[in-house]
Length: 291
Length: 322
Image (cartoon, rainbow over all chains, first blue to last red; front, side, top):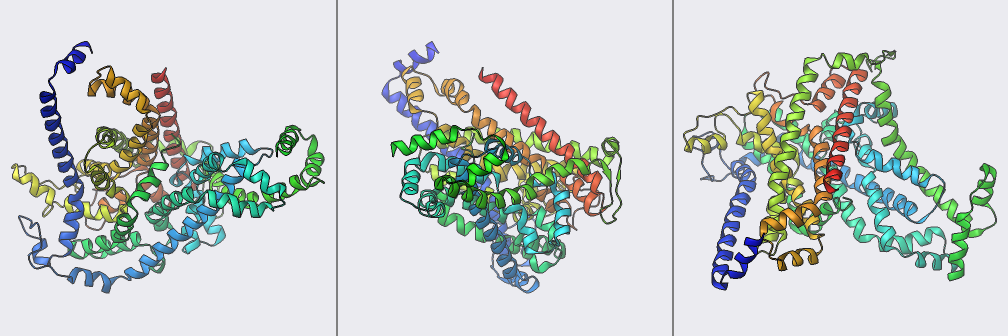
């Protein structure tokens, strides 16, 4: 400690500046190499998807396609109804998200601003079940879907994603800290109905948190794999992930069409990320705020 | 305003005695209380009912089912006590799955933290292009797992994979990464770390940004070097976030499925190359052999492992804080 201290004080400004520049260059070099490593899978996937078959299986591999072709994409379009899968993914993720938003907002509001017997106990149960992932109770869940006759239906795929413990928790925290009690009490005295208070005061105060939660819920439902795999027997209700996997079984070693299928699969999320990068990162960061 | 606030406060302090009094209080003459209670009951009951049906009930039922021998396609099921658990621990498939999943979890959690913690410290500081780097490292996290698993399968390809090509520059002979269970497990670990670095990074950055500037400024005035800063300021104050990252990544790691399924179980992987993990074993026992009780017992073991690890992590971090 002591040496360090005197060391810094004795450094001339010049020396310190050169050292700063060196660390900065070193830092950027490492980060740049890391970034390249992170992007290689994307690059390789995209590059392969535009190659003709003869160019894919060559040694040494070619970095870029010498005569780019859309053939692989045509193969995908003519083999699987990828637009249908895209619409299915959108439907499943949107309905789940809307359901998560409504239930989280209402329950969060009631847990934040009302007192009733058993409130803390019920809330504790919601918190406790939050750490148990679907995989842990997937067996009874599937049996419940059989009982409801929901196997192989959209509602069956959506069911587990339609409610989110973390969402209820998040909205409760948000409403507790941002919606003033005075507003609610004043509205009540002015004769506003509870429903009106909810719509006119609570909803407008919660839009930012709802936006973040919505993005989070959407990403989760969009990337779902195991549950749709169990639920969907009919390929007409496949989401994009399942469609791609089925496609993979058909075209086991044909990497051209496979990579084209993967590229099509990630495009919606990439587009969303380009336009909503900040919001998406913030919404994911929010999930850590409870720590 | 003030008066009504007091009124509400005093009313809420009264404890109801008995159900009838509670009911009268809920729907009695006070119009505020009545409309409030109608709102709570009308809005919360359906949500709690759905919540119970979709979460609480299946979680509890897993424990009950684990005590039965039941082919779920047939109606009759017999109570067998802890027999399923006894069989599990002499079941080679299960034991292998347990071992693989544990190696996978340890490796991904440790590597994930070791890579993302320094990364987030650097990126949280003032530096050029930080948002660009953040976006790049975060990108894999939001892309769908199945698609990226297919892409990585191509990277790991034993004949034409780019990884083997890269290694051949250093005269390392080609390896069938996904052909052998041992290398396949590590190949999947690397892929999973790649996929989730961005998530850990963002969480750590939240933690770092929550550290009050006065702390770091005071340390700088005292002449603390970069390492001292990390050792005495950043790291101790980051403990709650570290705990959160450890807990969530352990839970996620123990429930790994998609990348394993896509990368090793496709038609093209060699027979016997499948890396069995717990969730995959549950999936097989339930959907191929229809053993609802046995699969539930496996799920119970999975839940208990995750629960115990979470508690240990809590204890460990708490003790270090003291």
